[in-house]
Length: 145
Image (cartoon, rainbow, N blue to C red; front, side, top):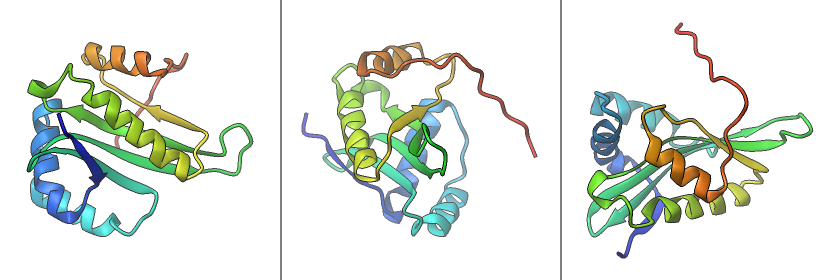
């Protein structure tokens, strides 16, 4: 398969939302997503990456680059919404997406990449481990505001 990876533009937002809503059982509103994308499109530390097969977006992730002043952390990246359309899984597309992400993160000076993934995504966890990601010995906490 000839997947083309690129940084997403405003024209890709609706298709990204369709894919992520499908993959993560979400109900993100397309107009809300478009508004947020428009507000953050010039932030060099927020990067949406898509994979296209022909004219269809079949892979996606959001990279957030976090520069810090702390030794041992320096600049790192957090990924979220890493996904491949279900019927295209098990073709190494996620591996190629992670290759593209790694290249972008290295260019941005990141020393590590972190990601979070829902407990129900067992196949994704196997992919991440195969790629060299290691689980943290800590919990991910959240507080609604």
